[in-house]
Amino acid sequence: MIARIDPEYAEFTLNSVPPVGATHFDMTSPTTSTKTSPDLILRAYELLFASFGPQHWWPGDTPFEIMVGAILTQNTNWRNVSRAIDNIKEKKLLEPKRLYKHRRMIPALIKPSGFYRLKSRRLTAFLEYFIEHYDGDINNMKRTPTSRLRNELLGVPGIGQETADSILLYAVKRSVFVVDAYTRRIFSRHGLFDDNLGYEEIRSLFECHMPRRPRLYNEYHALIVRCAKEFCRKHEPRCTDCPLHTI
Image (tube, rainbow, N blue to C red; front, side, top):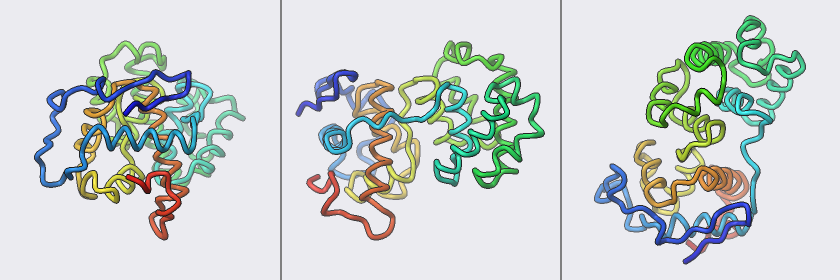
């Protein structure tokens, strides 16, 4: 099977997939299914892309805007995040050092995103880290190896695995697959793994069976979100109409 992406994306084949030994993921684990294979993971991508096309995700004019969005989107929908970011833009504060200088304004600015007191502390902690370690410059951050950068991000209060990986993939353009509740829901329902499988195991599973290309991971994650919202709903899923119903 060859999955063909639009002209902006590179063609990939099953032959380009790294061997299982390239990851620590244990294919003999009882929490994984016999469906675990490059064929299923890449076939799912092919079907989703054919159905939905490119998603142009993550929305944001700059890497810093993407970072802010990744923090604010925790436990809310993107519409609320967009309103919060618009508030920051209106005050001309969507720049790391300027936003940190006026950090007392953050709670009021991000109030539409919900849990604004908690998120203001998390955003402030990230700003302190970003400025202290990288002078608030994404180009400085890009010089840091992925594993080290991920560990640093996970050390920032309030930044968990999904948020850290979203920043790495969408802002820093690293080959790190983002796992969210939608990923878990769709692929556990299709028998790829048990619903209680850990985040790192799921991430390793996808990274093991896909070419390590940030733009591919970007598109796949966005397609998963689209599929979950339109078809693989938490309640009353539309299975017969879903692009993945043949898998």
